[in-house]
Image (cartoon, rainbow, N blue to C red; front, side, top):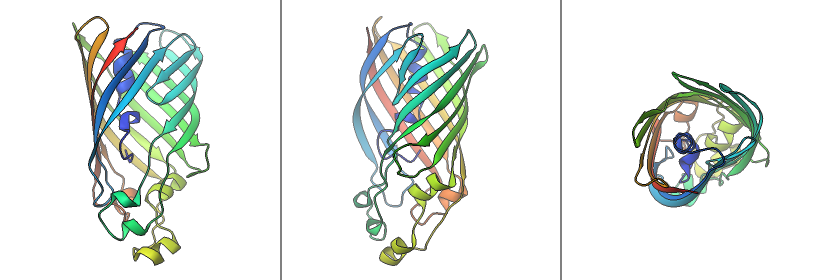
Length: 248
């Protein structure tokens, strides 16, 4: 993902907690995220973040998403979602002088729909959402698979999928406008839609009935539309999260 610090949206923290949670159970926790951004000469940072997770028959809060379950049965779940998207670019966080002349790219909020199919061989997720704060005016889609493997107190969740960014979304976070090109000396760049496959691995261990140790990592391979941006000097994005949660 392209977020500077709070990349728990991209990693499967919510699924990891869900695999260890009961219905109507609230979990709160604290963790740290280490993120390597694809932006050129960008700060590699470690940030401490609080988080919460809640599941009920109709309402859930997962990572940074609030959802209302429209319909569900033993295998299918269809919901409307409202999410905070912490993607951002801060010119001052790059050591490259040309990037310091660019405009800031801000965080935003998304509204959309998500669908989960639960089978013995894993869970399929399909989601689609759009920017509702007029930042990029773009859209994001995701198709992914994950599977929880339980071994006593230990849970392991491998995941894989692909994220689609619309051209306006990719343009906002990786494009360079004409006046930015003039101010920075970088070439004007107008990317199209991008498709970004990812791999993830999450692990949890119950230290106590209410206390769980969590860790999750995600590696995203960037589309050429992103890799070819003058703002970027990497072919991937990587995030690592470690934390603890307490269930009530």
